[in-house]
Length: 297
Ligand SMILES: N[C@@H](CCC[C@H](N)C(=O)O)C(=O)O
Image 1 (tube, rainbow, N blue to C red):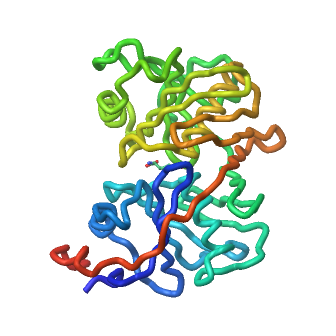
Image 2 (image 1 turned 180 degrees about the vertical axis):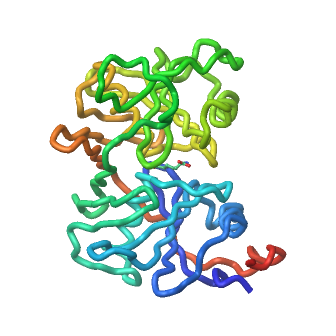
């Protein structure tokens, strides 16, 4: 029997980005990719990201997190999911750090300090953006460049080219376009996500700059598909837009599921993401989800 059978979970969302929070602190249980896929395939526990909490591995950290996509792959960052975890820690009676106003979470990509802004609103310090692919030649005039541009070539979508490539703990390719609705993202998303030029695959965004303080964004997520919102993509889009001088260092990013406020702080280059969360329901994993899966090695 899987150690996940009958385990309690919280089904949440951040702007419609579907999140399941699973607390495995105090255990040595690790989620296997096939278990993540089984959980994602169930209507009650469907997720875009599964956020799994483990005991903190560093002093000063409140919890370590492993982040799984629908296809069972792992990501180093999930902005919307991190806000959901923060809510769970400060508000859920069984997970509780009640009354906490700040938290520090740790992913494979680094530390994520979180500030509680209100009952359901959180700001996550997503860290400093990095080059997404080090070995692609730079075409940027600035020696301190934080993004690269590359010609993706005609892959059935010839007018999409030269994406800004920004790593926010996970790889993002952002295509600036005049109208985000003019593209068939469900069709071109998987082609771009899996294009050989992206060695770790990539989250694919279409960004339309509406003004110096407002960006529209549609996202095809690596390992998932179309989502209603992607926090790390919103951060990557603001960084890329600011680097191109299309916006300032703070903007509202409007996604299909709602709006995030993104600020790229001058002092330390960190990107701050502010937005809401919603609790949908809590549940326990049906043991039948895990029957027939291979036994752990
Ligand atoms: N929805 C997330 C990002 C999810 C990670 C992504 N699919 C990946 O594999 O990198 C967010 O809100 O940031």
